[in-house]
Image 1 (cartoon, one colour):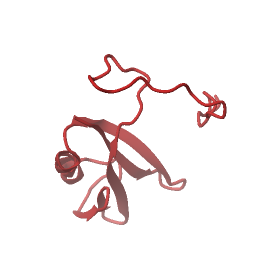
Image 2: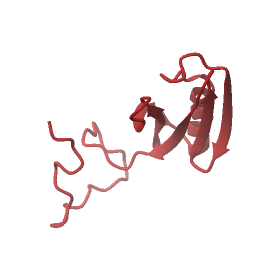
Image 3: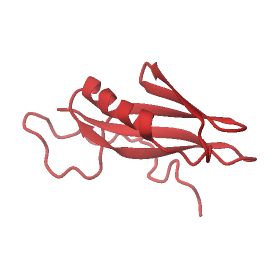
Image 4: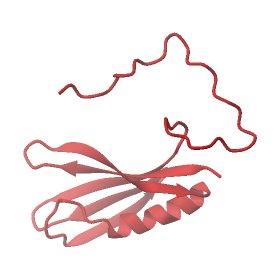
Length: 118
């Protein structure tokens, strides 16, 4: 059975608004079951902004939900998505019937690709 990541992306900050993604957890089951679980998060997740939410609008999208949370002066939005896990460096046991992965090609992405420099 596939494993699905439950993910929320939200706008953070005031003057320097940026997107931040948070891994809410994993769900084993069908995609539809994962979306049903994700809807619970979309309805109840408490974002950092706005501090005093007045209204929440939840829209279904192709891969999850888009949520608008209106505050007293501004509206913030969040995107809730399901994503099927296709690779994990920690794999405790390989399920029956799944072959070992092929060796990485010569042009594989470098190990430090995408990491922030400290």
